[in-house]
Image 1 (tube, rainbow, N blue to C red):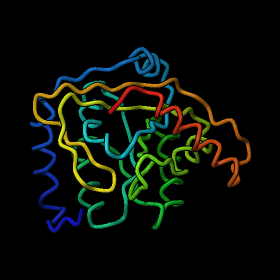
Image 2 (cartoon, rainbow, N blue to C red; image 1 turned 90 degrees about the vertical axis):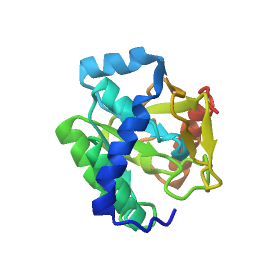
Image 3 (cartoon, rainbow, N blue to C red; image 1 turned 135 degrees about the horizontal axis):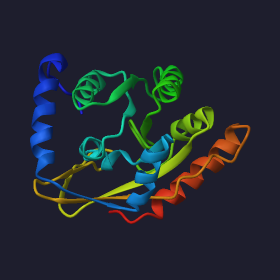
Length: 213
């Protein structure tokens, strides 16, 4: 991505522009009873989604009024994204698979327990391979003893970029549909490499089984 902007100065502008853009979207949700029952009970989830489908998530957070944290990389791009998301009401922790990943998971676990909030994890981020599940969501769900909520996003019209994730940017006035899968607990009690691989494959199959582009 290689952003060459001052994140402190530009993040507020980007957040403002995002709100205007997102306000034109028509937001829908399949299996919304899962979210409503969760908000009523106070249960938290690790929300698992693909990196290319994340654009509209702040708009849904704002519409339904739930608290959410997310893990953002420690790169310069990550600094900008973190500041922008915080302007949009997210809690952020910094880390990635290459730098600070374990520390980020520990911070995320602490926030989930203390503030009873959802955690959004782009399971193939931050650098791919595309639609291959990494271990972050499984690890976080196991350590917090919370369920994983698979989530897919579908846009009626969107620009696809040539980035590693083929990122989708929905056009203004586009219909956006989020599909929620059935929440589930991580079954493995000892998350060694083989167990982690099994749980990651299970999550990928659940994501692939939801309707999305």
